[in-house]
Length: 384
Ligand SMILES: Cc1ncc(COP(=O)(O)O)c(C=O)c1O
Image (cartoon, rainbow, N blue to C red; front, side, top):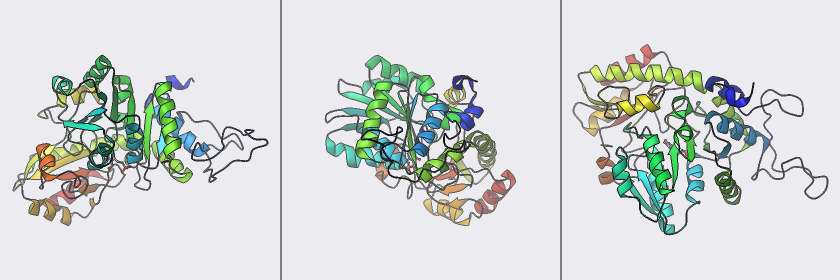
């Protein structure tokens, strides 16, 4: 069947893949090599040096392009390396309008690395297209969207932002780490670039650090491939293999993440010792209608604030968890709990972070795919 006709669940397994040419291996071998024999200068079989390309990484890149409904995939040594490559499309004097409630490391690379090179960033709430438009001027080259946002679970209307990007002839990049293409495919909604920390749901087993970009446009892909090779932040063949293996079960894992996420959010919402729960599946969530329209389900990420709204109580709950593990990261099969103010978002100044709602008493859960009764039981004993 032609690749384009495959549905999503089939694409995670077969998208962009074919049996290995040498022996018909169904999974691509881990081509643990830096270089490739040539018969005469330039006489090679498509691979010269593994920074430029490696067959295991190519298999992953083809899979990424397929599941995101793009044409070109690029894999990097981390999500931040992928972001770094996008920023290198820009020149001094260029401006970027970005979500204000975003992963702390993304904020850090924008502010502390790229501002130094003369790029200006505007961090704003992106719920309202008119507000975004008021920050666009003749120097604006890129809109950077993270949705759902990390960790406040706000949902940004990708199509509305894409229309704005088209109107002003600027690029739109969407960090699709939280949602994954199981829930939404931003390229289909008009985005130019999809970015992933594949470390999270795509890898899915907390055993790799990998980043990804997917685009449709050949000229843009060529620029990014040039940066990928010239800057060299690629992932190795073993990590490519593990990420590809993870992608093959993305759909079944995401289905369970969503089911468990819903059960956990609903449990917390009714708990007398919980003040506020952030999950886009609630009808009362301010962006619920957009979430319903652009996402297939609401994901496995849930944030909440205890009734006392004190950091001390939040930390007490986190320390008591037995099934949830206190750790950085998200999107693995195991449930994780985090304290954004001191962990993932510590690199954002307190004042800036609190403006977007990331207060010291906020707890973020990455709800895994364990039996949901065990997760609810763990919350029950920890919250008390
Ligand atoms: C939404 C989001 N984007 C980007 C990143 C950065 O990815 P990595 O840690 O793979 O560099 C993360 C990491 O936590 C993330 O959560």
